Image (cartoon, rainbow over all chains, first blue to last red; front, side):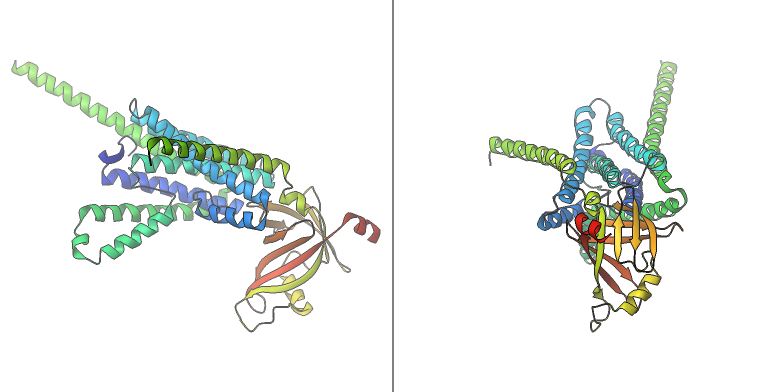
Length: 253
Length: 163
């Protein structure tokens, strides 16, 4: 799910990547909403709030919200700078590096929140900014490597697409279109995973508080390790096949 | 649009974004934050329903209903709210004095109050400036609705004189 890039991706790759990353995004968003009263996996609302605060003349709040939006932008920028520059050399490393940065950010929030958080407004603002950066990284990565077909934190667009596809499926010719059906499945998987992630995080939070960020990091870590495992298995199978073929060739000659 | 123009637009947009970010960071350090705004003493001016499920409901909240609403809340009936910089909130009235803890969440739009008993309440800060504070909260008493509490800042000199 991380190795393949753009058009070479299969439906299974996109569903796996979409589901797991949407699950973690749902976890982060719900947790930040419970703890900090701010969304961290999407910025649509922040644009509206930015406009509202500017119109009210609340320049401090407007500055904070602008900085949050910028952090989401920078997250997207950073992940794609890594992909663009290193994808040719090692696609697995290029796609894993942004996720490692995301894990570091989430672990930092979890650690600080659990051991040092004094519930001041400035701490809240910085931690929300860190999470928006992390979510920007994730969204930028998934959108980029899936040729923009998987956007795990962008549920406005997803719900729009589901609505459009549902309307299209009222016609038989669209229902029989395999590509549209696949897209519909990916979207449903993302929506369901996002919701499930949110519910799980909500439940974990009331038991473990900030340690929920360690659970989110574990989900993202699973994506990286699963891909590493698949990479090793594929390499092992290829080596086995080559040696077997070589053996057969040697015996025949 | 030719490539030269496109490049120029990309460059200008990037510069504006970065400059905007730098200005935002400077603003958060230079401007008065909601935390600093709220510190000090505030006098309750009015209680009224901002929104109610019943359209014919009188928006003004009577003292009797206020007392009933306050029974459910940790703020009880206080006339003066004194926000201290250390995170304590002193609620004073003619009959009662109470100390709570306060903190702000979100972008400074949520006021979190907590009681010794670990009971926590959240109030939406609708307006907060040098003179006025408006808090919203939901209540289930009488008619379900959003209660709007308006406060006026007690200037330091006046407060000192009063004491």
